[in-house]
Image (cartoon, rainbow, N blue to C red; front, side, top):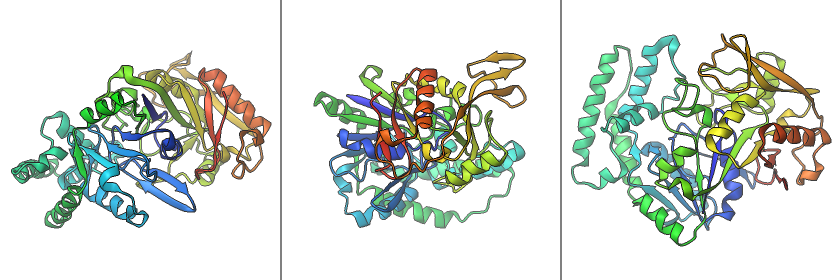
Length: 424
């Protein structure tokens, strides 16, 4: 059995927390796409952990954590993640597996990212500058270097050839990018040696074997559906398929093996970086959402743009992913608002629509809202769904009816214990 968990907005929905909470139900947690531009934050027992590439089930002894072929890996960042896990005495040699088909982010991929963004000027897409885009470009251009390549005796020749190509490309951008390649390479190759201490596997064969043994697998996504390279708000998207289809190509699993698709969304909406955002708020309400919600990127520290919940975009993501159940995060952040707005339609080029159009640019799109009664209760100490205020129950019921998918979890804080299960 394979279940799939992914984000339904522009990322930062709280996927890592829910994976951590649900891991006890599974034998394997498998990350299927993205790179270290993602930051999954987990909080428990008074500690906060931020993971970038390692799956969010790593703190559970019983679960195997797999980095799938659809992921791009920066060895330097991966090494730092491993070092932060050292105090917890985790059996990483046996519990953390890496697909040989996962691609490597080279130092020059990050430099290319910088050069590309600098060359775009005001048209930049808001890249995290982690080298994700250039790495996926090399992957699709059939130039990439994969984890399995570093086991070959000639792998450094491949590295040098690709690096030389990147340096020429950087020069062609005709923008100033300052770097010390020797220092970057020393750090890179040192991290490669650390990576070699883990198990590299042919992950598609491994997962097939585990399925035959009736193991329970949870596929973990990164970023969010509206950042999908095909179905997101292009070109202000990431470089991989963040939607359900990405789990199949990112792990080598068949579509008919997927049972449940768990969609994670915030009780409101946020976005990091550039790109359209129909319900974005520029007033006191937006400032309050950002401040109370501590809306800063786990990886970049960048402030997130905040707005009301967008049901048009959310329905679109539910449809594209085939979502079977929903988890609503950060309900506690909405406490204190007298009224809460929900976008139900767009006015688009003079027409009222309830679907995501090709171009979501603010020149064409105006959100249409319904107002719901807010609540003024501190939810963070509540541990049973029946303790929640009536107005929040009404909010959840309203969303379930509008989205036609049950909401099975309401989160009221970042800690594991602040996760309330509903019998929908």
